[in-house]
Length: 299
Image (tube, rainbow, N blue to C red; front, side):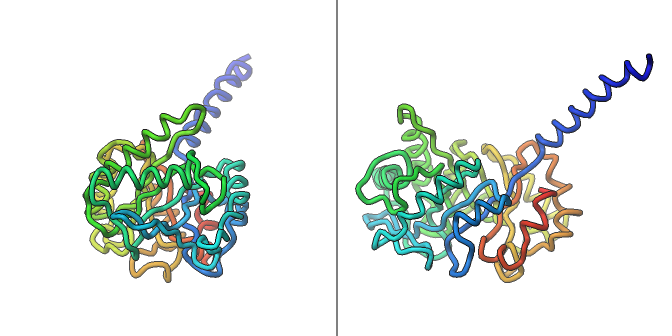
């Protein structure tokens, strides 16, 4: 009788443990589109390794410029050659993967000159990549899930206005889905460019670049890294991701071997209520190093 009575209790306890483990389970976000020779978008999503795929980059926009998308040799948007990616995007989304478009990057011509300029850029992104309509949608008629702010130049003003405008456009679309917002700040806190936008409280995901920044990246030491992580935890955003290079060749500094990440780094941050997972730069390097394969069961 005692054993029978214990059985339901043990079952409930086991389910609670499983639920708690699931609550703290993270996902992997990966940047795609900036290198020749990386897997196709459909193959990237079919791998089952990623929860987010970020298409990079719209590298030219704002200040009166005609926006331009660069996806390396994957396709040529100027000739309409990227519209075929619509089927791939929908396939990714049908598997539960969020597909976002990154604006900015480390090498481009972009910036915002006023709130009106921000409003114009938001309208362009909405009509050409999100839930709006345009005769010249570079990626075809697929509706992306959101916009990623990888702002690394062009000044720090009016990004908050752009974020508000994009969120408002998503809210005002009857029957449509909202607009997810993500940001990819450098790990020194606060970020020189994204700080104002992130402080709007509108960002769903912040994947912090803990690489090419020796003072705060993982190999700066546990104390320095955790100090930086806790600062990023304090921002008014949904989830915080640990941004890392997917191989030694993917960044100048900041690579963390997979075994070290799994055993020593992730246990330090997975208990955070804002922990979202790991962001990798980029799919090209992940293809060569197999980094996501080595970490996905631990993230």
